[in-house]
Length: 111
Image (tube, rainbow, N blue to C red; front, side, top):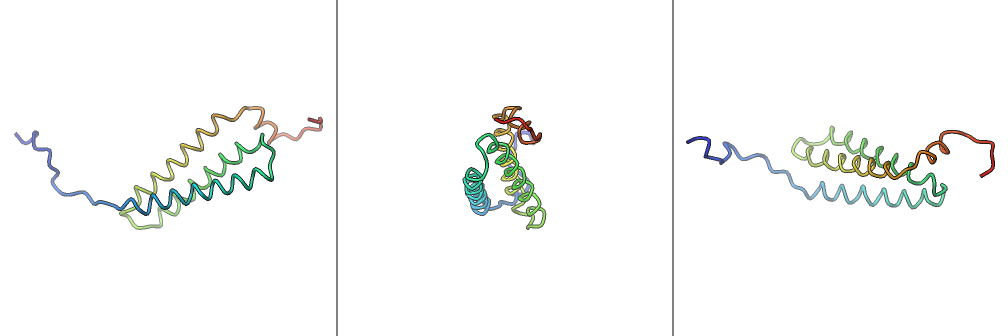
């Protein structure tokens, strides 16, 4: 009954999650600091699109750096990039279309 034996043939490589957790915490801290800095420079309507764009850029940077790193920690860092992308998508769901139009189009009308 070979199908009842659920033991793996070889132990899978175990990567440490410490570095990925530190990376994730550092990226979230940098994003929070950047969002606070953007809050002082941008109007509140433009803050959500700017933070979402920042999260997408940091996720892409994290994925790019991951390609250059060792192979045993790659899946964990790709997970961090995926979580950042997911958070960026969640933030974009909160953005109203009028906010994007105000960012892209220049209007001569006073607010």
